[in-house]
Image 1 (spheres, helix red, strand yellow):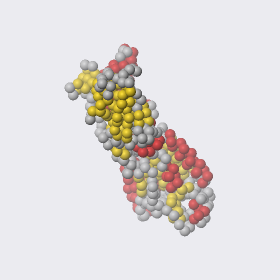
Image 2 (image 1 turned 90 degrees about the vertical axis):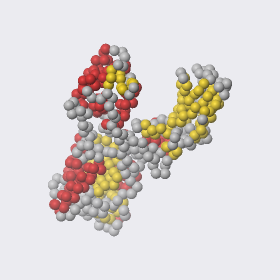
Image 3 (image 1 turned 135 degrees about the horizontal axis):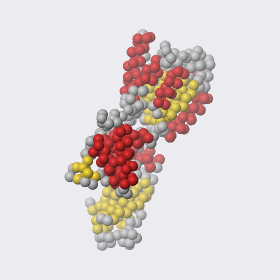
Image 4 (image 1 turned 180 degrees about the horizontal axis):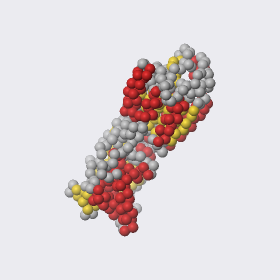
Amino acid sequence: MDRLALVIGNANYTFANALNNPINDARDISDILRKLGFEVVEGFNLTLTETNEMVNSFLRDLDNYSTGLLFYAGHGMQIDGKNYIVPVDCKILDQSQTIFSCYCIDDYLSKLNVYKGKTNIIILDACRNNPFATGRGMVSGFSEFHNTPRGTIIAFSTSPDCTASDGIGSNGLYTQVLKDAIQIPNMKIEEIFKAVRIKVSELSLSAFHEEQLSWEHSCLVGDFYFSVTPQPVNIEYSDEEIYAFVKERGDYYEGETENIYDIECMPYVDAYKKFNLPIIKILRAFSRIQYKNDGKAFSDPTIDELNYHYINSWGFKLKNGRWYYRDNYVEMGDLLPLSEELSQPTPESECELRIGGRVKGELENGKARFTLWSNIPVDTPLIFSLRRKNYLAQCSVSVTEKFTISDLFSNKGQALRNGHYRLQITCPIHSVLPESVKEVFGERNRNITGGFVSFDPIGGNTINMNYEFLIKDNEIIAIE
């Protein structure tokens, strides 16, 4: 599982009447989230101390997950524009004392700021008529949140400064609608909450003659689906049928040949002939099952992009506009359009770094050393690759304050031969960069731009500098 949820329901208040449905709401949401692939931690009728301990534990564990979800049902209120969860041991006191007996959701948001690149979902069914909000500055209902962390969506059971129904059945009105909606497959989270809003409005007017209008605040930067049910690549054959056939043919070639290319490619050639489907679709069907078995989840466009990289390394060849494996013609098919998650990211506001640089080469006893002057941040790891026909040498260095110097390049310890050389300077993908560099480059290196930056749908932006040199008569001459 790559998704973690904390679900809290508070109903049995010590110093106020009990609420009917928050425990049911929390338990029902927990059960559904587990079915949707979340690891769920539950807390019921929590005191302030228990709330702090459970939330802090959840935030520590969240580092190991791509998605975090907090669901809360119970009393909630705002004090001087900040929003609070009301623990069951909260007393009706003056404003200053009440602040210290409730859990501040704004503080929770500030702690989420350390988790860049994650999806964070907060669902608050928490604005029932509130006996605690009786003092000056204390108001039933939540206020709007400010400075919401990037990648976060907050869903409220009702609009800012309004209250919500505790329901007339076993659930609050909002959760009653929500728990069905989040199980609808292939709907983006924003579409789900919009559908919930329409239904809650309709039911509240019908049952209570007063509209309850749910509300969201979103800083999401990608798409999120609670449930995804991929459509088969072909209505005649299930993904499972294609997977089983490719697996069986793979086992066959494993036992018949030592040729790794035959083992990798021929099962798909056979599947192409059997199912009359393009290789890309066969690979998509196979990979869906394989990734699921491995506990991984990728969108179909991501699967296509990954597989296309494999195809080129396995031994499939494009000849005269047609694809072959050896003498076997195959229809390769089209990749799905790049999704937003794979498209080239735009720089964050006021964070764009246009990469520039110049390089000078010098020979030392026939061996070449290169110096790079650039605006690349200090500590960025770089790979210097020097190429010519039948020659490739590389070294890895980190950017220093003023300039960056490569190791010496030689021909097996001897002087380099005269000829035309190309020097390529690259940086790794975002995930392996030092934290200080990640902060500048942004998610998927989105903040770096310019002619020295290349884009790959899987890896994002990377530095890619290319320079041409001529080595002749113990001299390095730059070729413009």
